[in-house]
Length: 475
Ligand code: NAD
Image 1 (tube, rainbow, N blue to C red):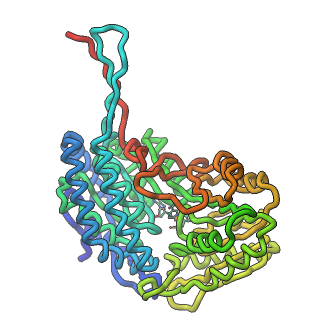
Image 2: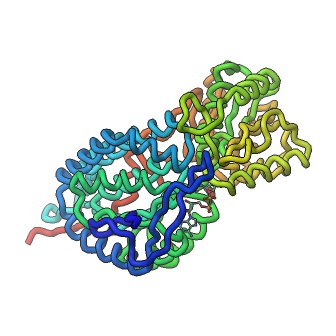
Image 3: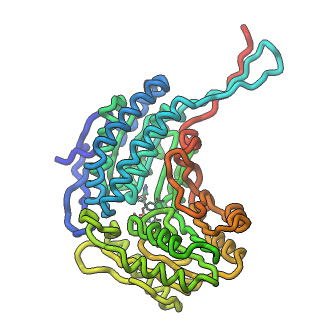
């Protein structure tokens, strides 16, 4: 019996008997199963979310905040166990999984604090006997869809943001990594989130999204995942006039000017590119390096990539684990084959490692033409392109060439250059001279095809609030 659905405060294996296999990507072995929700289970979750919304939205911000802070503490106490399950089911090195699990508490705490700051405002009226107020109210029951690449990091923002605002939520967590999502949900349950306010489901993603988004009970949809799926869910949501937050893919440029420090920037670039085996929406993919330092930067970057210790993320000292699915290996091979056929030079890696598990070499391509697929599609894997530029305006034009607009990175000691890059690059986020994205108190989100809306920062809770204008004349 696999009880992995949490509906109306109860753990259940659901009303059907469909199950998904959970695979350890480091071995390819089946290590568990996850129960799939049927339509009846989704209807039960919808009814529970609707009923719980009535009471949770009326629970004081003070009490919601207190419960959330308790959930944050529980998540910290259990971070070690949660991290081990992330590594087992998703593959990232234990050190990365520990950071992800450990930061869940910070995200929950941030939203717990924000719950008490959902200020409205008073608008001066035209007559002294009238009061005009703007109230912020929870939007209603939320349907949230979170991906497998950060199975805690992405899920926790949606759950904590919705609950902090006074919304109830049905979260569809990734079928690939159910255990950590279940553990996180237990933290909220044991902290005192009432039955029905948080529901957790797994299943066939398209069935669940179609069922939930079409329901009149759901008032808000939050999705993190690929651009094509985001487009599809955006269209479904528009059909039912549901508000959306879409955190979609990216193809981040990483611009290195000729006055930057080669060794430290190359080391940072290697760390960022191959973190989570490149399966990060903000992962840098196009390294654009200015002529004067191009050869030395490429050499340092390739040396860094070749030195990485790749293996089972559960083993000590591993710096890059497997990719999460066998299908990502096929995708990586396709990107490399296509780029090389179009004249790119392969400087490191390029192929899968062994036949056990889903390992792919840290890969570096250079002189890649813009016609290559890797220059246009998000690789979502351990492949870096290092290309050269001369004039800064050419780098900015290349950065903005794609319809993606999530994250960008830029390196220069000259403020005239960093200022031009900061203003000229079309993304939702830019990190200059360091890595500084994704803290709970900062907004995270993209523009253009990378989506809309922000998670985190003061903007995060706004996604779950509506504006009510009140005009009252003295009776
Ligand atoms: P995919 O497009 O099949 O799925 C992406 C995510 O959307 C998964 O979590 C999946 O469960 C979910 N999904 C798919 N169809 C859905 C539907 N109809 N309704 C609701 N959810 C649905 O791709 P994949 O092979 O799982 O992942 C690889 C691609 O996903 C990458 O190319 C990358 O662009 C994207 N991705 C992005 C992020 C991110 O953080 N923005 C995270 C994970 C995956």
